[in-house]
Image (tube, rainbow, N blue to C red; front, side):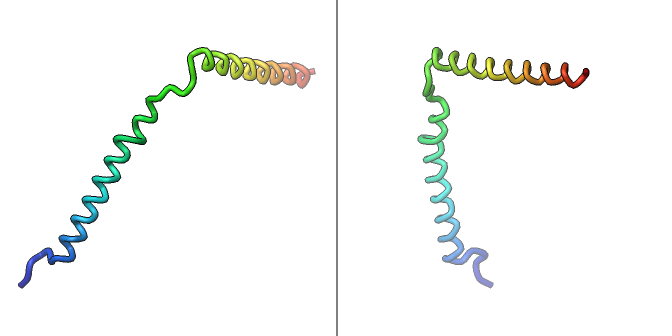
Length: 72
């Protein structure tokens, strides 16, 4: 009876391990830290939030306005 793992199986396991190490290194050093970068300033964020809140307000008012006229 031979070994459980022959040379090809050991090579495949080593190759998969190296590939996973490289992928993990790329994720850890390049992709994950990109989430921490602030691409817009606080002033720009405030402007966007105000615009979005105003659009939501207009949509809500239009819905209420329609609801009032549907009741009559």
